[in-house]
Amino acid sequence: MLTSGTSFSWYRHREKEFIQFFSKEKNFVFCNDVQGLKKCFDVEYDPSEWRLFIDSSKTSFKAVLLPNGNSFTSLPLGHSVHLEENYNDLSMTFEKINYQEHRWMVVLNMS
Image (tube, one colour):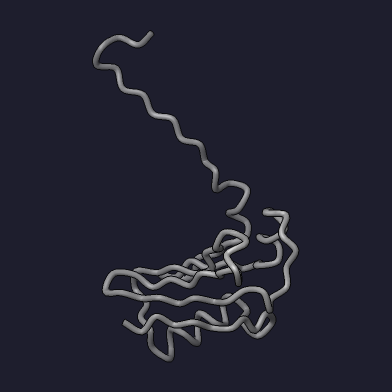
């Protein structure tokens, strides 16, 4: 038993097996291997069964892969607190997540 006043911290580091699938460039963290990330979840990957959801607010920009029909969990593909929903940032996001290879349907939240 710990004595009164003793503090204890324990970190799980669940991200270790997934960190290889993400990169950081400047102020943008993004998935660099979508197919590899999908394999970790033992999910068959058909790009037509997923859609790319892009959302931004005053405090963050995020790109998330959502399954059609909600049969699986969503997968984060990109995040930044410095990007905005403008042509240059969207273009860079598409390049980094290799959109041309997957060609998901894109959904934007323009609020």
